[in-house]
Amino acid sequence: MSPSDRPLIAIIGGGASGTLLAWNLRRQHVHARIIVIDPAARPAVGLAYSTLSPCHFLNVPAGGMSADPDDPEHFLRWLRVHHDPDVTSGQFMPRAVFGRYLSGLWTEAGPEWRQTRVLSCHRIAGGLELMLEDGGLLQADQVVLATGNFGPAPVARVTPELTRSGRYHPSGWDNGLYDTIAPEDAVVLIGTGLTSLDVLMRLRENGHAGTIVALSRHGWCPERHAPSVPAESDVIPVGTPATARAYFRAFRDSLAKGTGWRSAVDALRPRINPLWQALDLVEKKRFRRHLQRRWDIVRHRIAPGVADIMVAELEHGTLDCRRGQVTHLGLEAGQVVVNTRAGAGAFTLSADHVVNCTGPSRAYRQMPDTLPHALLEAGMVRETALGGLHCREDGALTDAAGQCAGDLFALGPMRWGTLFETTAIPEIRRQVADLAALLKERCGHDIREAPCDVALPG
Ligand SMILES: Cc1cc2nc3c(=O)[nH]c(=O)nc-3n(C[C@H](O)[C@H](O)[C@H](O)COP(=O)(O)OP(=O)(O)OC[C@H]3O[C@@H](n4cnc5c(N)ncnc54)[C@H](O)[C@@H]3O)c2cc1C
Image 1 (tube, rainbow, N blue to C red):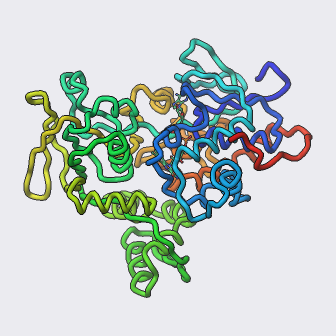
Image 2 (image 1 turned 180 degrees about the horizontal axis):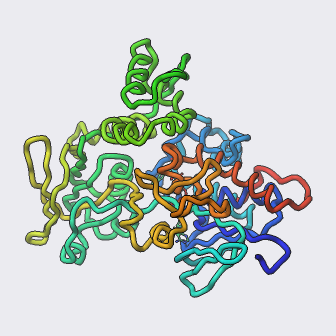
Image 3 (image 1 turned 30 degrees about the horizontal axis):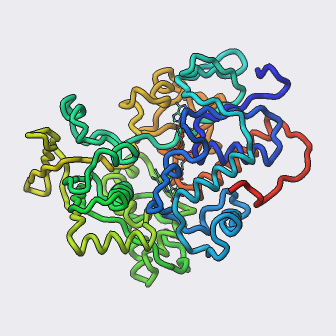
């Protein structure tokens, strides 16, 4: 397929997932031409680690963020050389520092980089062809979809007038929004999770002083990380019936026996995907309906320093976390009006700016500008009954007819739907190592000296 003697591996998306894969392929001397396609101005860092804000912290301690699952100290060693010689594994680093680490891995991997977007992908004799936004076509033997997280789904209808006003921000991850919000502006954040805290921290960094209202259906704020000892016994013992209720009971029983909730959650992490996959569709839906939000709160915890700031803001009333589901967004007298429903009641807020912080959407059918949407339309991939894409255990995507050619793979967040836990670095690095091994088996490898370590560019 590739004009050279080597097969061509195309990695779509050069964020953390794509970068780690390119790095692994290079370290394993896979006999292939490796091209990463990503339109971003800066490769390697993707959405999560492109922030330059010193207030945006990792939500996993440094000791858990190694790029290499078989070398848990890899990031720590890099930090000691390039950031702080005294850093410890329990510290939480700014995400920008992790971005520098990824940039170093990118440099070490040295993939070819095509700075454009992939519009679609279809099958041709003996391989796959990618259609690129720059007008090019790329023929590849193996393709990996590492397109990561897309912006949040709309919470209510947004009129063209509201969009034109520049006062409604459809994604809390849009760095441009900070240029438009003045220090005294009234701000409403839709969502009370990690993205809302990111926006709050960045606004404060920019001198914003007013009260910020954060709204969500439950009004729950994130929990903090704290040292925890691993649970001694199985939190959900083998043999527990595969139902949401039985899992919940077993979890509660474990807490009743004295296991701390953080320990229980952490102990479940390595088993969470098999537990999820054991549930049938009805039970998965039941879990999503009744337990998902609670799980998210205890699972996605924040760095202690960020938690301290959140608690102080809540105590001073400068952060007002409220329960309320947005039912309507409008524009009146130059202000954004937010109508909400909460329990039996309803209330209305008005603000200079409203920011949607509800987290990534995976409703690809409703996202016409994205590659997953184009792939679904072309029948190259299919959705699971709960959204997200259907793939095999090795990440190979299944097409609309249920067939799996085994040359188009999903990585990281793109496995969400098939997997429950798949978006964080600890899961991504494992998937990457396994996929690199599979691709090495297919493409063969070049015999070279052993890879170097640590001396990455800073
Ligand atoms: C704000 C935030 C903070 C996080 N913090 C942590 C943390 O502290 N610890 C942790 O373990 N995990 C964290 N995560 C989880 C995070 O999802 C992963 O760690 C990781 O960043 C996912 O990387 P990715 O490369 O799969 O996706 P992304 O970083 O989203 O990168 C995807 C890339 O694909 C490109 N792309 C998209 N569409 C196309 C196309 N059609 N053609 C070509 N390129 C395309 C994009 O330009 C982008 O560069 C965080 C996530 C977010 C959003």
